[in-house]
Image (cartoon, rainbow, N blue to C red; front, side, top):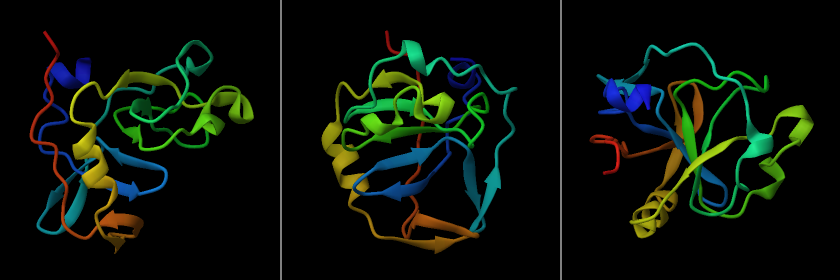
Amino acid sequence: LKYVDAKHYDGTIFHRIIGNFMIQGGGFKEVDGSFKKQPTNPPIKNESEKTPSNKRGTIAMARTSAPNSATSQFFINVVDNTFLNYPNNGGGYATFGKVIKGIEVVDKMKAVKTGAKNGMANVPIETVTIKSVKRAK
C-alpha cells in the first residue's frame, strides 16, 4: 500500500507476459524506448505460507530466487500456478490480492505479442501501461 499511496505504479509497464503463466509489472517505466527501473522500498519478508494459493486471477509478489527479495514488482496469475505455492524451494510466492473485476482485460493482456527488448524476454511488442493504481473504497 505504500507504493499505491506514493503513486509508484502510475505509468509503470507490464514488462513480462507469458500467456500460459502470468503477467508481470510494477518495476519499470518506459522512457524513450528504454526501461527505467523505478526506485523501491527495502524488500519484504516472504509470507507465502500464510497466503491463498496462486490460482487464476490472484496477484502475487514477484521476487528473485531469494525468498525475501520482493519489492514493488507483482504478477497476475493467468492460470492456476499452484507450483508457486509455499514451500517452492523454501519460499513460494505470496499472493496479496485478486482480480475481482476486469478479468477479461487480463485475458486480453496475456494474448499480446511478445519478444525480446531491453535485454529481457517475453516483453510486449506494444507497451502495456498501468495508468494508475488506487486503494479500493
